[in-house]
Image (cartoon, rainbow, N blue to C red; front, side, top):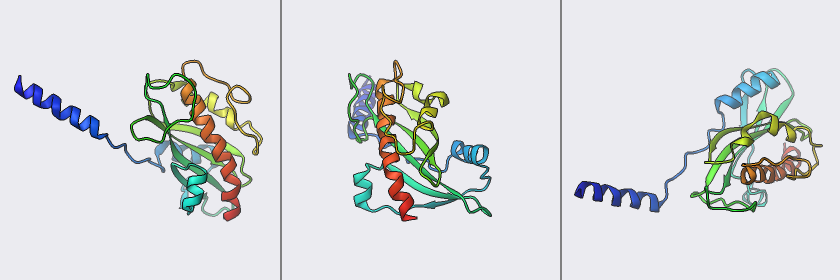
Length: 190
């Protein structure tokens, strides 16, 4: 019984200190397959774009931006690979700005842009939340590709909401609105 009590106290202490989250795996298998299948880039060369602290703060970046070259070809794509924090199950009751606190639930995704700033593909590759799995659907994510490259995505206007994934659909849509706005500045710096 004493061992069980000591173990419980230790476990509570660890949980209350906060568990660190793993780093984002930016060059993951899903991204590499997508580059090969959709963009004919079999051996991508990832070049991280250096961003200033001001830029990172202005666009609330919680990831990295890469220029991905296709060896032997002059065209390239820009990839934003990042993390979106959403609410812990039972912690939110309505769509709202989500927190960047490590204690919240999250998912990792990437958005691929062409050299003109148009969204070419969006994929969620690491979903670590208890609810809202509807946003990982390729069909739902294709809505971002259909937008004009200057059009701001808004749930209920040009992006469909998802019953049971209200928080997640708003979270990724808000983050994509920032990425679409950000991409022009990134492209001008290359």
